[in-house]
Each structure stands twice: as C-alpha cells, then as structure tokens.
Length: 189
Image (cartoon, rainbow, N blue to C red; front, side, top):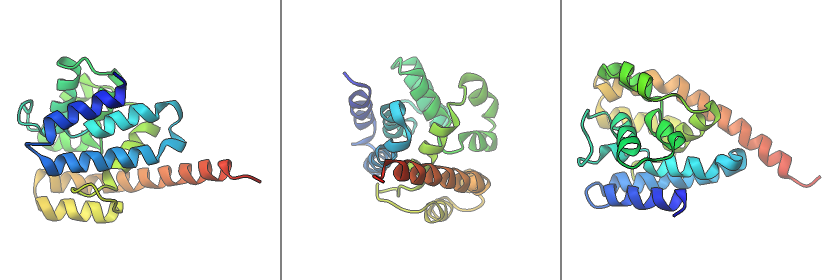
C-alpha cells in the first residue's frame, strides 16, 4: 500500500466517526498540502501523508498526554512503524514546540523527535493554518483568530497560538514566495 493511501486509511479509521469535524479538517489540510506540490518535489507524497495524519493524536484511543502532536507521533512511531519523516512532521506540526512548552512537555518532544527539513515544516504549518476546522480554505490571520476565539486567549492553546503567530505568518510568507517562484519558473517564455 502506498504511503498516502495508508495515511488516509489510518486517519479515517481514527477520526471519521468519533471526530468527524477533525477528520474534515485533516482532509482539508491534506488537500492544501497537495496544492503545494510544485515546491515539494519528491517530498509531496510525504507531506500529504503527514498532513492527513497530523491530528490523529486527538483520537481518544491513543491520547495519553493530551498533547496531540506528541501522542500522535508516538502512536505512529511505536504502533504503526510509520515513516520516520512523517512521524517527525506530525510531532512538530504548527509550532508544536511552543505548545509543548506551555504544557511542560517540550523536553519530551525535543528529545524524542528531531525537526524535519524547514521547507517541509513550513509547508505543513501553512497547510494547517490555512484550513478551517471544517476543511475549508482560510487565511492564517483568520485561522489564528478562530483558534483564539474557540479556546480563549488565556488557555494553553490560546497562549501558544498567540506566541506562534509570528512564525506562522513568516512560514506563510516563505511558502508563498516559493510558490510564486515555482509558478514563474514553470511559465512558458
């Protein structure tokens, strides 16, 4: 079974029934990741797999710490024997180190899972932070405002996402520049 086919099947089995909105979001993130293929080259399939799996840690069947990037990455590594790069992307998606710090789990996340290449980390940040909870397209500004409103500004998630905002916006700018350059390079002259 191919990497993306496996990833979609696993994510669907863990999220679609117990967490249908999370499943819709994951599908939207994967669609957005697929749209970035012009700048991903041979890593396009890898990113799409990580995108559809990025929120599996929300599944109550595997949640142990309550911190979904860590729970999901541990599950993918320990139970599924998933590709190491997919696991690293899931572990560190969307500035997870900052949220791990808020939760007192930064040391565990940092020591268990290395960071993936910055270009892929950026692409997954953008895929996640330009997708609504229902799987639609949005802007990073609107997405961050929605997260703060949903969780509250003084919650762990609210504090973390406000701290992460500059890096999320910077990642979006880097990805947009790369997409423009890739598109311009593909245009006939």
